[in-house]
Image (tube, rainbow, N blue to C red; front, top):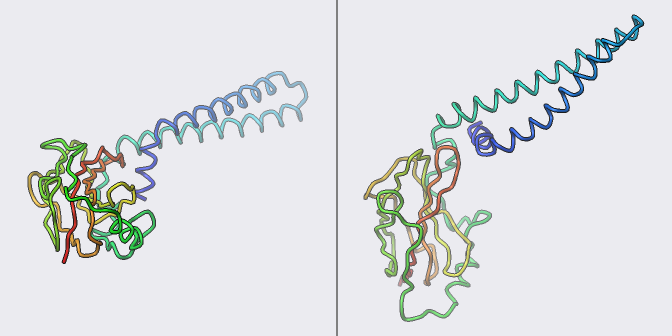
Length: 226
């Protein structure tokens, strides 16, 4: 249910617009039924009009109840949810290659790309004291199992995850995740032996407590295992 509540909070504005349109039709129907009942002359005619008025009124109250329910969920329920309900597992296996993540074929293809002598460098989206990867540094050559350090601490923090993709692609694979804020400390470990040698982007992503993904911190590294 946590995912449902987060989606209701994320699309709050669109849901209000949809309910407002439905509400207009419901109140219009109720108004027409009331006028029919008011102008009815015969008993049977008034009975039918009264029945339609009751149905229209009940539908209008249902729509109004949905508006209040959406407001309550978006304002009180969703912000109070913990991040753990949207983390399927703290550590993901790159070799499993789930949909939308890095596959062994993609890693092999990346390894076959020409490797320049100079390690790519550069950093984007990183903000000190908010979202930052301090190790490995951008342009660093890494191998084996390494420890990632940095900062993942923003207002309304939900959880963070760190991902990898071959240089020049958007095939991001989740390495691991955490649901506690981190300040200049260990974010987690990364076993680079699951990847072919080559150049990669490493990014740190933070999702807040209503499911909004913030701009990631991205660094470029080179995997060079024996």
